[in-house]
Length: 181
Image (tube, rainbow, N blue to C red):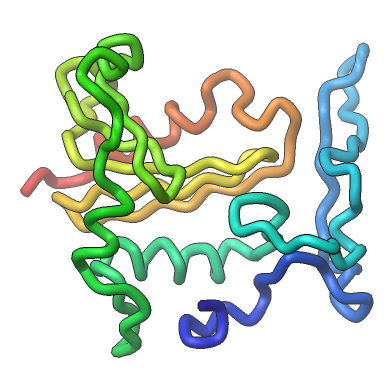
C-alpha cells in the first residue's frame, strides 16, 4: 500500500538512518513544562515481531495526507487505484445498530476502525452525515468530508492525545471555512 501511494516515510518501525527524524511524545508535568513519555512497550525504533495494521504505524504528515486523499478519492490517488470505490464505501459505512448509535450521539463505527457520522443533527459544530475520521494514540487524526471533498490531517505528539478537545475544535474551524456544496 505504501509504495503505490508514494508513502516513502511510512512503516511499522523507524530504521536507524531515519531515527533522527522521529519526534518525541510529550505529556503535561506537574509544572508548566512538558515531559517526554513513551507510549508503546516496544520503541518505534525496534522492528516489532508482529506487524499490526491498526497499531504502531509511523508516518509523516505528507504521507498520511496521501493516504487520506486516496480514501477521499474513492480509493484512487494520482492515477493509482489502490481500493475499489465500493470498498472505501464499505469500510467507511456505519456498522452499529440504531440502539448503539443513540448512546454515541449519532456517531457510528466503520470496519476500517473509523468513526462515521450518521446523524448530523445529533453532532455538533455543523457536522454533516457521511463524515468519517480515524484517530491515533498520540494526536494524529484524519478527517474526511466526502460531500465537500475535504480532507484534514492533524498531528501532534501528546498524551493525552486530544487535549482540550483540540481535534474537534480544529475540525469545527475547518467546517466553518468550507463553502457548502
